[in-house]
Length: 453
Image 1 (cartoon, rainbow, N blue to C red):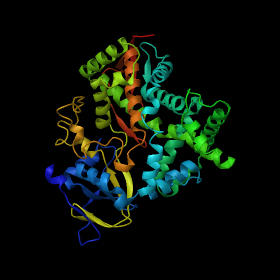
Image 2 (cartoon, rainbow, N blue to C red; image 1 turned 30 degrees about the vertical axis):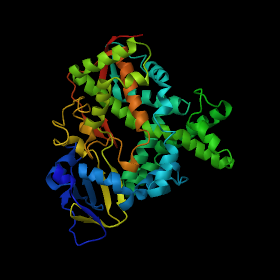
Image 3 (tube, rainbow, N blue to C red; image 1 turned 180 degrees about the vertical axis):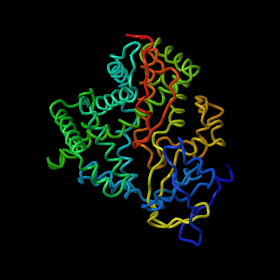
Image 4 (cartoon, rainbow, N blue to C red; image 1 turned 90 degrees about the horizontal axis):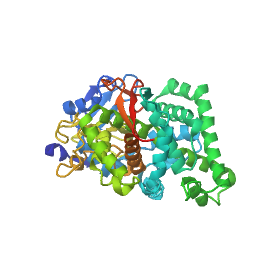
Protein backbone atom coordinates (compact mmCIF):
# COMPACT_ATOMS: atom_id res chain seq x y z
CA UNK A 1 0.00 0.00 0.00
CA UNK A 2 2.78 2.45 0.81
CA UNK A 3 4.09 2.19 -2.74
CA UNK A 4 0.65 2.95 -4.14
CA UNK A 5 0.09 5.88 -1.82
CA UNK A 6 3.20 7.62 -3.10
CA UNK A 7 2.04 7.55 -6.73
CA UNK A 8 2.85 10.84 -8.37
CA UNK A 9 0.74 13.40 -10.15
CA UNK A 10 1.59 16.67 -11.83
CA UNK A 11 -0.30 19.53 -13.37
CA UNK A 12 -0.19 20.37 -17.05
CA UNK A 13 -0.28 18.25 -20.18
CA UNK A 14 2.54 15.83 -20.85
CA UNK A 15 3.67 13.04 -23.09
CA UNK A 16 2.39 10.49 -20.60
CA UNK A 17 0.37 7.60 -22.08
CA UNK A 18 -3.37 7.15 -21.84
CA UNK A 19 -4.65 4.90 -19.05
CA UNK A 20 -5.13 1.22 -19.99
CA UNK A 21 -8.37 0.46 -21.82
CA UNK A 22 -10.50 -2.34 -20.40
CA UNK A 23 -13.93 -3.77 -21.15
CA UNK A 24 -16.79 -2.45 -19.04
CA UNK A 25 -17.70 -4.86 -16.25
CA UNK A 26 -21.12 -6.42 -15.88
CA UNK A 27 -22.31 -4.41 -12.89
CA UNK A 28 -24.67 -7.21 -11.86
CA UNK A 29 -22.13 -10.04 -12.08
CA UNK A 30 -20.30 -9.25 -8.84
CA UNK A 31 -20.95 -7.03 -5.89
CA UNK A 32 -17.93 -4.75 -6.34
CA UNK A 33 -16.61 -5.15 -9.92
CA UNK A 34 -14.23 -2.18 -9.72
CA UNK A 35 -12.25 -3.88 -6.97
CA UNK A 36 -11.12 -6.60 -9.39
CA UNK A 37 -10.26 -4.02 -12.05
CA UNK A 38 -8.26 -2.01 -9.54
CA UNK A 39 -6.29 -5.12 -8.62
CA UNK A 40 -5.59 -5.88 -12.27
CA UNK A 41 -4.94 -2.40 -13.69
CA UNK A 42 -4.10 -0.08 -10.81
CA UNK A 43 -5.65 3.21 -9.67
CA UNK A 44 -6.55 4.55 -13.13
CA UNK A 45 -7.99 2.86 -16.22
CA UNK A 46 -10.44 3.53 -19.03
CA UNK A 47 -13.70 1.69 -19.63
CA UNK A 48 -14.81 1.06 -23.19
CA UNK A 49 -18.52 1.70 -23.54
CA UNK A 50 -20.04 0.66 -26.89
CA UNK A 51 -21.81 3.64 -28.42
CA UNK A 52 -20.75 5.95 -25.60
CA UNK A 53 -17.76 8.04 -24.62
CA UNK A 54 -14.85 6.26 -22.93
CA UNK A 55 -15.01 6.65 -19.16
CA UNK A 56 -11.95 6.98 -16.93
CA UNK A 57 -12.07 5.28 -13.54
CA UNK A 58 -10.05 6.49 -10.56
CA UNK A 59 -9.99 3.96 -7.73
CA UNK A 60 -8.15 3.00 -4.56
CA UNK A 61 -6.96 4.89 -1.48
CA UNK A 62 -4.48 6.94 -3.50
CA UNK A 63 -7.26 8.17 -5.80
CA UNK A 64 -9.51 9.01 -2.82
CA UNK A 65 -6.73 10.99 -1.14
CA UNK A 66 -5.98 12.83 -4.38
CA UNK A 67 -9.63 13.70 -5.09
CA UNK A 68 -10.29 14.83 -1.53
CA UNK A 69 -7.46 17.35 -1.83
CA UNK A 70 -7.39 18.35 -5.49
CA UNK A 71 -10.83 17.80 -7.03
CA UNK A 72 -11.68 21.49 -7.18
CA UNK A 73 -8.28 22.21 -8.73
CA UNK A 74 -8.49 19.85 -11.71
CA UNK A 75 -12.15 18.86 -12.06
CA UNK A 76 -15.63 20.24 -12.43
CA UNK A 77 -18.81 18.44 -11.44
CA UNK A 78 -21.08 21.08 -12.90
CA UNK A 79 -21.74 19.25 -16.17
CA UNK A 80 -22.82 16.09 -14.38
CA UNK A 81 -24.96 17.88 -11.81
CA UNK A 82 -26.52 20.25 -14.34
CA UNK A 83 -28.69 17.58 -15.88
CA UNK A 84 -29.90 16.37 -12.50
CA UNK A 85 -30.50 19.87 -11.15
CA UNK A 86 -32.38 20.89 -14.28
CA UNK A 87 -34.55 17.78 -14.11
CA UNK A 88 -35.33 18.23 -10.43
CA UNK A 89 -36.01 21.97 -10.66
CA UNK A 90 -37.71 21.86 -14.07
CA UNK A 91 -35.08 24.25 -15.38
CA UNK A 92 -35.61 26.90 -12.69
CA UNK A 93 -32.54 26.26 -10.53
CA UNK A 94 -29.06 27.67 -10.80
CA UNK A 95 -27.81 25.11 -8.32
CA UNK A 96 -25.28 23.52 -10.67
CA UNK A 97 -23.45 26.88 -10.79
CA UNK A 98 -22.49 26.32 -7.13
CA UNK A 99 -21.18 22.75 -7.41
CA UNK A 100 -17.49 23.60 -7.88
CA UNK A 101 -14.64 25.62 -6.41
CA UNK A 102 -15.21 28.68 -4.26
CA UNK A 103 -18.94 28.78 -5.02
CA UNK A 104 -19.28 25.23 -3.73
CA UNK A 105 -17.30 26.02 -0.59
CA UNK A 106 -19.47 29.06 0.14
CA UNK A 107 -22.65 27.06 -0.49
CA UNK A 108 -21.49 24.32 1.86
CA UNK A 109 -20.47 26.81 4.53
CA UNK A 110 -23.87 28.49 4.45
CA UNK A 111 -25.69 25.14 4.45
CA UNK A 112 -23.58 23.29 7.00
CA UNK A 113 -25.56 24.47 10.02
CA UNK A 114 -28.96 23.58 8.62
CA UNK A 115 -27.74 20.08 7.72
CA UNK A 116 -25.72 19.49 10.87
CA UNK A 117 -26.30 16.60 13.24
CA UNK A 118 -27.08 19.11 16.00
CA UNK A 119 -30.38 19.96 14.28
CA UNK A 120 -31.98 16.67 15.27
CA UNK A 121 -30.23 15.65 18.50
CA UNK A 122 -32.95 17.22 20.64
CA UNK A 123 -35.51 15.40 18.51
CA UNK A 124 -34.26 11.88 19.21
CA UNK A 125 -37.40 11.13 21.31
CA UNK A 126 -39.53 12.20 18.33
CA UNK A 127 -37.45 10.01 16.02
CA UNK A 128 -38.06 7.06 18.32
CA UNK A 129 -41.79 7.82 18.39
CA UNK A 130 -42.00 8.00 14.59
CA UNK A 131 -40.18 4.67 14.29
CA UNK A 132 -42.56 3.03 16.76
CA UNK A 133 -45.59 4.54 15.04
CA UNK A 134 -44.51 3.35 11.58
CA UNK A 135 -43.83 -0.18 12.87
CA UNK A 136 -46.82 -0.50 15.18
CA UNK A 137 -48.67 -2.78 12.73
CA UNK A 138 -45.82 -5.27 12.46
CA UNK A 139 -47.40 -8.54 13.59
CA UNK A 140 -45.82 -11.67 15.02
CA UNK A 141 -45.07 -14.33 12.37
CA UNK A 142 -46.09 -12.03 9.50
CA UNK A 143 -43.62 -11.20 6.72
CA UNK A 144 -42.48 -7.58 6.54
CA UNK A 145 -41.14 -6.07 3.32
CA UNK A 146 -37.99 -4.43 4.64
CA UNK A 147 -37.27 -1.86 1.92
CA UNK A 148 -40.79 -0.41 1.84
CA UNK A 149 -40.96 -0.35 5.63
CA UNK A 150 -37.63 1.42 6.10
CA UNK A 151 -38.45 3.91 3.39
CA UNK A 152 -41.65 4.84 5.22
CA UNK A 153 -39.85 5.25 8.56
CA UNK A 154 -37.06 7.37 7.08
CA UNK A 155 -39.37 9.58 5.03
CA UNK A 156 -41.56 10.34 8.04
CA UNK A 157 -38.49 11.19 10.13
CA UNK A 158 -37.13 13.52 7.46
CA UNK A 159 -40.46 15.19 6.84
CA UNK A 160 -41.59 15.72 10.39
CA UNK A 161 -38.23 16.50 12.01
CA UNK A 162 -36.55 18.66 9.34
CA UNK A 163 -39.47 20.48 7.73
CA UNK A 164 -42.34 19.85 10.15
CA UNK A 165 -44.52 18.21 7.51
CA UNK A 166 -45.31 14.53 6.96
CA UNK A 167 -44.88 13.11 3.43
CA UNK A 168 -47.84 10.79 4.01
CA UNK A 169 -49.38 9.67 0.75
CA UNK A 170 -46.74 11.53 -1.29
CA UNK A 171 -43.96 9.01 -0.55
CA UNK A 172 -44.38 6.95 -3.72
CA UNK A 173 -44.34 10.14 -5.78
CA UNK A 174 -41.00 11.14 -4.24
CA UNK A 175 -39.56 7.73 -5.04
CA UNK A 176 -40.67 7.92 -8.70
CA UNK A 177 -39.51 11.53 -8.98
CA UNK A 178 -36.06 10.90 -7.54
CA UNK A 179 -35.29 7.62 -9.27
CA UNK A 180 -36.42 8.86 -12.67
CA UNK A 181 -34.28 11.99 -12.31
CA UNK A 182 -31.22 9.92 -11.37
CA UNK A 183 -31.73 7.45 -14.21
CA UNK A 184 -32.17 10.35 -16.62
CA UNK A 185 -28.94 11.89 -15.37
CA UNK A 186 -27.05 8.66 -15.95
CA UNK A 187 -28.62 7.96 -19.35
CA UNK A 188 -28.22 9.52 -22.75
CA UNK A 189 -30.39 10.05 -25.76
CA UNK A 190 -33.92 8.90 -26.51
CA UNK A 191 -34.35 6.57 -23.53
CA UNK A 192 -33.66 9.37 -21.07
CA UNK A 193 -36.11 11.69 -22.79
CA UNK A 194 -38.84 9.09 -22.83
CA UNK A 195 -38.58 8.54 -19.08
CA UNK A 196 -39.22 12.24 -18.46
CA UNK A 197 -42.23 12.23 -20.78
CA UNK A 198 -44.02 9.33 -19.10
CA UNK A 199 -47.37 10.03 -17.49
CA UNK A 200 -46.15 8.40 -14.27
CA UNK A 201 -43.19 10.75 -13.97
CA UNK A 202 -45.21 13.85 -14.86
CA UNK A 203 -47.76 12.97 -12.19
CA UNK A 204 -44.97 12.45 -9.66
CA UNK A 205 -43.48 15.87 -10.50
CA UNK A 206 -46.82 17.57 -9.98
CA UNK A 207 -47.45 15.75 -6.73
CA UNK A 208 -44.00 16.41 -5.27
CA UNK A 209 -44.27 20.14 -6.00
CA UNK A 210 -47.78 20.10 -4.55
CA UNK A 211 -46.29 18.63 -1.37
CA UNK A 212 -43.60 21.32 -1.26
CA UNK A 213 -46.13 24.12 -1.69
CA UNK A 214 -48.37 22.68 1.03
CA UNK A 215 -45.45 22.42 3.44
CA UNK A 216 -44.50 26.04 2.77
CA UNK A 217 -48.07 27.28 3.16
CA UNK A 218 -48.47 25.31 6.40
CA UNK A 219 -45.50 27.20 7.83
CA UNK A 220 -47.03 30.53 6.91
CA UNK A 221 -50.15 29.59 8.88
CA UNK A 222 -48.37 27.83 11.77
CA UNK A 223 -44.66 28.67 12.03
CA UNK A 224 -42.23 26.39 13.85
CA UNK A 225 -44.37 23.22 13.91
CA UNK A 226 -41.55 21.30 15.63
CA UNK A 227 -41.32 23.88 18.44
CA UNK A 228 -38.29 25.67 17.04
CA UNK A 229 -37.30 27.02 13.61
CA UNK A 230 -36.92 24.20 11.09
CA UNK A 231 -35.46 24.33 7.58
CA UNK A 232 -38.53 26.00 6.10
CA UNK A 233 -38.89 28.55 8.91
CA UNK A 234 -35.24 29.56 8.51
CA UNK A 235 -35.60 29.83 4.74
CA UNK A 236 -38.71 32.00 5.08
CA UNK A 237 -36.75 34.39 7.29
CA UNK A 238 -33.85 34.52 4.80
CA UNK A 239 -36.10 35.13 1.82
CA UNK A 240 -38.62 37.59 3.24
CA UNK A 241 -37.52 40.34 0.84
CA UNK A 242 -37.75 38.20 -2.30
CA UNK A 243 -40.64 38.71 -4.74
CA UNK A 244 -43.50 36.39 -3.77
CA UNK A 245 -43.40 34.20 -6.88
CA UNK A 246 -39.66 33.62 -6.57
CA UNK A 247 -39.92 33.05 -2.83
CA UNK A 248 -42.70 30.52 -3.27
CA UNK A 249 -40.70 28.55 -5.85
CA UNK A 250 -37.54 28.57 -3.75
CA UNK A 251 -39.30 27.59 -0.54
CA UNK A 252 -41.10 24.78 -2.31
CA UNK A 253 -37.64 23.52 -3.24
CA UNK A 254 -36.47 23.84 0.37
CA UNK A 255 -39.38 21.64 1.46
CA UNK A 256 -38.59 19.00 -1.15
CA UNK A 257 -34.83 18.90 -0.55
CA UNK A 258 -34.55 16.80 2.63
CA UNK A 259 -36.88 14.18 1.20
CA UNK A 260 -34.81 13.79 -1.95
CA UNK A 261 -31.56 13.76 0.01
CA UNK A 262 -32.36 10.92 2.38
CA UNK A 263 -35.27 8.72 1.35
CA UNK A 264 -33.26 6.17 -0.60
CA UNK A 265 -29.78 6.47 0.90
CA UNK A 266 -30.74 6.17 4.57
CA UNK A 267 -33.51 3.65 3.94
CA UNK A 268 -31.20 1.43 1.90
CA UNK A 269 -28.53 1.54 4.59
CA UNK A 270 -31.11 0.63 7.23
CA UNK A 271 -32.07 -2.39 5.14
CA UNK A 272 -28.46 -3.52 4.91
CA UNK A 273 -27.89 -2.92 8.63
CA UNK A 274 -30.97 -4.99 9.46
CA UNK A 275 -29.74 -7.84 7.28
CA UNK A 276 -26.24 -7.82 8.76
CA UNK A 277 -27.41 -7.87 12.37
CA UNK A 278 -29.90 -10.68 11.77
CA UNK A 279 -27.39 -12.62 9.70
CA UNK A 280 -24.72 -12.58 12.41
CA UNK A 281 -26.29 -13.54 15.79
CA UNK A 282 -23.12 -12.92 17.82
CA UNK A 283 -22.99 -9.32 16.63
CA UNK A 284 -26.72 -8.91 17.18
CA UNK A 285 -26.36 -10.07 20.80
CA UNK A 286 -23.67 -7.48 21.44
CA UNK A 287 -25.67 -4.63 19.93
CA UNK A 288 -28.85 -5.83 21.64
CA UNK A 289 -27.13 -5.78 25.04
CA UNK A 290 -26.07 -2.17 24.52
CA UNK A 291 -29.56 -1.19 23.42
CA UNK A 292 -31.22 -2.88 26.40
CA UNK A 293 -28.83 -1.20 28.83
CA UNK A 294 -29.40 2.22 27.27
CA UNK A 295 -33.20 2.02 27.34
CA UNK A 296 -33.26 0.53 30.85
CA UNK A 297 -31.52 3.66 32.09
CA UNK A 298 -34.15 6.08 30.81
CA UNK A 299 -34.76 7.75 27.41
CA UNK A 300 -32.24 7.24 24.64
CA UNK A 301 -30.04 10.32 24.16
CA UNK A 302 -27.11 11.31 22.00
CA UNK A 303 -24.83 11.13 25.04
CA UNK A 304 -25.84 7.50 25.54
CA UNK A 305 -25.39 6.66 21.86
CA UNK A 306 -21.84 8.01 21.96
CA UNK A 307 -21.14 5.41 24.66
CA UNK A 308 -22.46 2.52 22.51
CA UNK A 309 -19.44 1.35 20.49
CA UNK A 310 -21.11 -1.84 19.23
CA UNK A 311 -24.08 0.06 17.78
CA UNK A 312 -21.74 2.65 16.26
CA UNK A 313 -19.51 -0.09 14.91
CA UNK A 314 -22.47 -1.86 13.31
CA UNK A 315 -23.55 1.39 11.66
CA UNK A 316 -20.07 2.18 10.34
CA UNK A 317 -19.45 -1.37 9.17
CA UNK A 318 -22.78 -1.33 7.31
CA UNK A 319 -21.67 1.81 5.47
CA UNK A 320 -18.33 0.18 4.66
CA UNK A 321 -19.53 -3.28 3.75
CA UNK A 322 -22.74 -2.26 1.95
CA UNK A 323 -22.11 1.23 0.49
CA UNK A 324 -25.20 2.63 -1.21
CA UNK A 325 -23.26 5.19 -3.27
CA UNK A 326 -20.13 3.68 -4.79
CA UNK A 327 -18.79 6.74 -6.56
CA UNK A 328 -19.44 10.05 -8.24
CA UNK A 329 -18.85 11.61 -11.63
CA UNK A 330 -16.56 14.49 -12.52
CA UNK A 331 -15.29 16.25 -15.64
CA UNK A 332 -11.60 17.04 -16.17
CA UNK A 333 -11.14 20.82 -16.36
CA UNK A 334 -7.34 21.11 -16.32
CA UNK A 335 -4.77 18.71 -17.83
CA UNK A 336 -2.67 16.66 -15.44
CA UNK A 337 -1.07 13.25 -15.03
CA UNK A 338 -1.92 10.75 -12.32
CA UNK A 339 0.03 7.56 -11.62
CA UNK A 340 1.93 8.12 -14.86
CA UNK A 341 -1.14 8.48 -17.10
CA UNK A 342 -2.55 11.64 -18.62
CA UNK A 343 -5.99 13.14 -18.32
CA UNK A 344 -7.17 15.92 -20.60
CA UNK A 345 -9.92 18.56 -20.36
CA UNK A 346 -13.20 17.04 -21.39
CA UNK A 347 -12.44 13.56 -20.06
CA UNK A 348 -15.26 12.04 -18.05
CA UNK A 349 -14.17 10.46 -14.78
CA UNK A 350 -15.89 8.23 -12.28
CA UNK A 351 -14.33 8.17 -8.84
CA UNK A 352 -14.95 4.67 -7.48
CA UNK A 353 -14.60 5.94 -3.94
CA UNK A 354 -15.66 2.78 -2.07
CA UNK A 355 -13.12 0.43 -3.71
CA UNK A 356 -10.80 0.88 -0.68
CA UNK A 357 -13.57 -0.56 1.52
CA UNK A 358 -12.78 -3.98 0.04
CA UNK A 359 -8.98 -4.03 -0.01
CA UNK A 360 -7.26 -6.54 2.27
CA UNK A 361 -4.33 -4.22 2.96
CA UNK A 362 -6.74 -1.73 4.51
CA UNK A 363 -9.43 -4.01 5.94
CA UNK A 364 -8.28 -7.56 6.72
CA UNK A 365 -10.90 -10.05 5.51
CA UNK A 366 -12.85 -7.19 3.91
CA UNK A 367 -15.96 -9.21 3.02
CA UNK A 368 -16.45 -10.13 6.68
CA UNK A 369 -18.85 -7.98 8.75
CA UNK A 370 -16.59 -6.93 11.63
CA UNK A 371 -17.84 -4.18 13.95
CA UNK A 372 -14.49 -3.91 15.78
CA UNK A 373 -12.62 -2.43 12.83
CA UNK A 374 -13.23 1.11 14.03
CA UNK A 375 -11.95 0.79 17.59
CA UNK A 376 -8.55 1.38 19.10
CA UNK A 377 -6.03 0.15 18.28
CA UNK A 378 -7.26 -0.99 14.85
CA UNK A 379 -8.94 2.21 13.56
CA UNK A 380 -8.86 0.78 10.04
CA UNK A 381 -11.09 3.56 8.71
CA UNK A 382 -8.55 6.23 9.68
CA UNK A 383 -6.01 5.11 7.09
CA UNK A 384 -5.56 7.63 4.32
CA UNK A 385 -8.22 7.28 1.63
CA UNK A 386 -9.70 4.18 3.27
CA UNK A 387 -13.26 5.18 4.20
CA UNK A 388 -15.63 7.21 2.04
CA UNK A 389 -19.27 6.17 2.52
CA UNK A 390 -20.51 9.75 2.18
CA UNK A 391 -18.18 11.14 -0.49
CA UNK A 392 -14.87 12.99 -0.54
CA UNK A 393 -13.53 16.41 0.37
CA UNK A 394 -15.74 19.35 -0.55
CA UNK A 395 -18.25 16.94 -2.08
CA UNK A 396 -18.93 14.97 1.09
CA UNK A 397 -22.65 14.66 1.86
CA UNK A 398 -23.74 17.55 4.08
CA UNK A 399 -26.36 15.37 5.77
CA UNK A 400 -23.96 12.59 6.78
CA UNK A 401 -24.30 13.36 10.49
CA UNK A 402 -28.10 13.32 10.32
CA UNK A 403 -28.02 10.01 8.42
CA UNK A 404 -25.80 8.40 11.07
CA UNK A 405 -28.17 9.45 13.85
CA UNK A 406 -31.15 8.10 11.91
CA UNK A 407 -29.42 4.76 11.36
CA UNK A 408 -28.47 4.26 15.00
CA UNK A 409 -31.65 5.57 16.63
CA UNK A 410 -33.97 3.72 14.26
CA UNK A 411 -32.12 0.42 14.64
CA UNK A 412 -31.91 0.78 18.43
CA UNK A 413 -35.66 1.45 18.58
CA UNK A 414 -36.55 -1.57 16.45
CA UNK A 415 -34.29 -3.85 18.50
CA UNK A 416 -35.81 -2.45 21.71
CA UNK A 417 -39.33 -3.09 20.41
CA UNK A 418 -39.07 -6.42 18.56
CA UNK A 419 -37.27 -9.73 18.35
CA UNK A 420 -36.73 -10.06 14.60
CA UNK A 421 -35.44 -12.73 12.24
CA UNK A 422 -34.83 -13.12 8.54
CA UNK A 423 -37.75 -14.51 6.57
CA UNK A 424 -36.88 -17.23 5.67
CA UNK A 425 -34.18 -17.68 8.35
CA UNK A 426 -31.63 -18.80 5.74
CA UNK A 427 -32.29 -15.88 3.39
CA UNK A 428 -29.18 -14.85 1.42
CA UNK A 429 -29.00 -11.18 0.48
CA UNK A 430 -29.17 -10.10 -3.14
CA UNK A 431 -28.09 -6.60 -4.11
CA UNK A 432 -29.67 -4.79 -7.04
CA UNK A 433 -28.80 -1.49 -8.69
CA UNK A 434 -31.76 0.72 -9.65
CA UNK A 435 -30.14 3.18 -9.64
CA UNK A 436 -28.42 2.98 -6.23
CA UNK A 437 -27.49 -0.24 -4.44
CA UNK A 438 -30.57 -1.72 -2.76
CA UNK A 439 -31.46 -5.09 -1.23
CA UNK A 440 -33.59 -7.23 -3.53
CA UNK A 441 -37.33 -6.68 -3.22
CA UNK A 442 -37.68 -10.22 -1.86
CA UNK A 443 -35.89 -9.22 1.36
CA UNK A 444 -38.27 -9.82 4.26
CA UNK A 445 -38.08 -10.12 8.01
CA UNK A 446 -40.64 -11.23 10.55
CA UNK A 447 -41.41 -10.47 14.18
CA UNK A 448 -40.69 -13.39 16.49
CA UNK A 449 -41.76 -11.51 19.59
CA UNK A 450 -42.85 -8.01 20.58
CA UNK A 451 -40.60 -6.88 23.41
CA UNK A 452 -42.13 -3.47 24.18
CA UNK A 453 -45.61 -2.11 23.52
